[in-house]
Length: 231
Ligand SMILES: NC(=O)c1ccc[n+]([C@@H]2O[C@H](COP(=O)([O-])OP(=O)(O)OC[C@H]3O[C@@H](n4cnc5c(N)ncnc54)[C@H](OP(=O)(O)O)[C@@H]3O)[C@@H](O)[C@H]2O)c1
Image 1: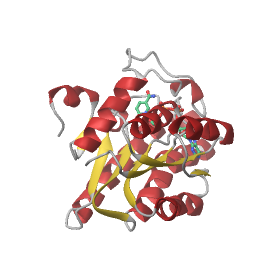
Image 2: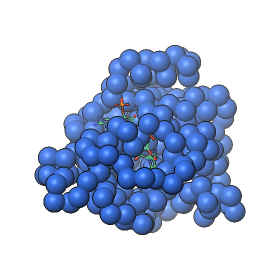
Image 3: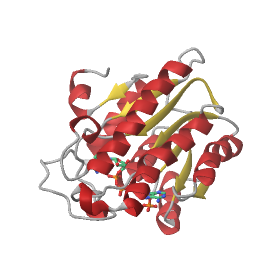
Image 4: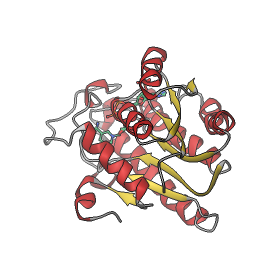
């Protein structure tokens, strides 16, 4: 897709990757609507991206999450792309996670992104794009983060099925499957401490992967594949 002039909703625009993505998109001429949970961080990103709409939402409120795409379409006079960068990790043995944390992790990493994109499917124009960030854990399913990995796998499967459904409507669906990224994400886990992780890619490299995927109308991108071309 052509990013210059595109009307793009970034959900999770307050995070390390979401904020850097929003700024990159604005820098190359996209018109952005920004959604995030933390009001102060959201205001800061909005300022750095230039004038435009912003909206607070919490992933726990699935109706609010679902309403985000309609809001963005209204504010921008249409919607060409949505990128969901919302997520939270949880670390620890399955027997110690507990149902409240498990529900939280599923809501933030799977149900809320699905709610946003489900409603966006009715608003994004033909030629447009729905995208969400998953993670290599969705494939590798490492020990010590079962609920986080399962939530990302659920989102990945949902994206694949939705892509098949929306093909005829001319709307692309992109899965951004990131490896470990050197953001503050692991340190913000809802519970537990991250196991030793391999060196990650930088936030700027993660943004490169996302923007390349958008430009190439890719179906799935990850940092390893993006060095060889998107898939
Ligand atoms: N960093 C990594 O190693 C890595 C690897 C693979 C995939 N990912 C994925 O990349 C995405 C971005 O991660 P990041 O590295 O940028 O981490 P981050 O800085 O912690 O960003 C997480 C984002 O999720 C939002 N969020 C968390 N809980 C929320 C809730 N209950 N309601 C609404 N928003 C909520 C945060 O909002 P607030 O800031 O407003 O609280 C923030 O915008 C996530 O989906 C993550 O799973 C990260």
